[in-house]
Image 1: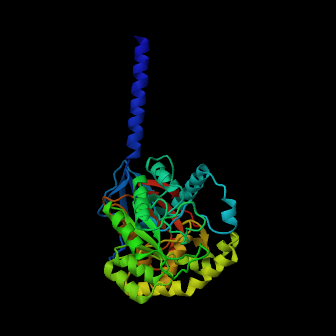
Image 2: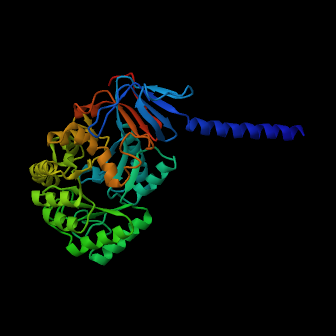
Length: 431
């Protein structure tokens, strides 16, 4: 009998321990004292209170209108500015580029790849990027990592993935690869395989690119029939389609066929940008890759002369395309084509990309939207993420300065919260 009582006590203790842990996980948190930045042109909320229960925001408003429960965990963010978690819509966690980097990773195993991606994912979250889209990576490491993060087995941002990118023989990403796809039927089958594996986006390379030696960047290399087939097949399954394109001709075909986003857009002209605006097509500029801020990175990885020559050939055209896209009011979502947390020009790649948008003609508020609410809209997830509102996930970043006044405020991130959990807390410290 005594043995039974001991077992019962131990079991009861274990149950209460589990319940206590569960209660702790859902304990109300209150971020107080900060200014909530407004993304819509309204007044900011000063001396704000943001109440969080579990993963979501349950109340937000001024201190005079929102009561803080006595049992809440209080996070004092006095003197800071709160924005939604940053988003980066063009990320390759398994990034491999020509040169020394490619040589070093030539024999990388699948296990090594996923571990490298997981390490980068942790750094990205620390840098304030709580959501990423991966438009084509290697060996489905992204899909495995996405599942692990969702299960709490790994730490990183929310991931929207395209699985592996689809390239044609001789096209961008198609030289030296084991698998390329030619003709509508091969591409349709390949798209369906990626969707079956868990991809919610499909990535196609429809023009030449910087990182592939051969195939002109401004030329349409994928045929209209191939482009149209992938878009139609993907949309039938509810998957969206992104196209790597530096070509106005290729982009025009893709936009007319219903493409969801254009990546890079190195040589886009005003006519196709007007068409993108009319059709609501998204542009993910990745302006960083062609501008001076990234030169030290290319030197560090030992980029070969042909690569640097191709990069330099697009720089002025790429910048002008971004300026015109802003002028025409094209939907723009931030993406870097670099690891979002990578040190770049004294800040992170994500912050520098947003700052380039301001230099090209956006207001700081527009650039901030391009890094938050606009990507959420592009993903079709703006009911859950992208802004600080009741009912949405508590993906929150605290800045030391007001980003509406100056986009360089993104350089100094003090707090990072994703789904109600704090991953970085430098409140009270100045970096």
